[in-house]
Length: 201
Image (tube, rainbow, N blue to C red; front, side, top):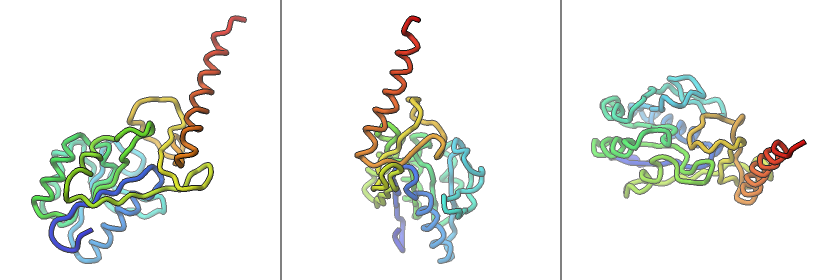
C-alpha cells in the first residue's frame, strides 16, 4: 500500500488464503499512523457479525454493512483509507465506486476471491485488477488434502450457483493437482448414486 497519495491494492486468492487477515493488517497499520480508516463489507456475507470483519486468526475490526456499492463513496467521504472485504459479492458498481474513491485521493484496499468454485472469474474482481493503478497481492492457502500450495476453491456440494455463502462446512482449499480429482470424485459419486436409484428392482 502506498505511503502517500491515492493508491489501490487488490488482495486475491482462494478461500482460506488469508485475504481478510491481510486486509486487516493493512488497515491496522494505517490506523497506527493516525489515518482515518473505514472498513466495508457486503450485506450478503452473513458468516460473521454484520458490523465486524474478522480473520480466521481471531482478529476483528469494526465495519459498515452495505447492500449497494452506490453507498460507499458517500460513506467514505471523511476517511483516508477504505478497506473493502469480500468484494466479489458486490454489484458491478464496485468498479465505479473504487474509481471514485481513487479520484478523491483515498487509499483503497480491496480483498476478494478472483475465481469461484468452478475456477471461473468471480464478480467484478477481474475488472478491478484491470484498473492500471491496481497493485496485486495474490495469496495462497494450504491444500487440505496434500498440504501443498492451494490455489483453488473446491465446493463440497454439487450446487452450481456461483454464490453460496459458507465456510469450511461447504468449501476446501485445494492445489491444482488435487482439485481435478476432487471434482471428478464428487460428481462421479453423484452420478453413481443416480444410476443406482434408476435401476429397476
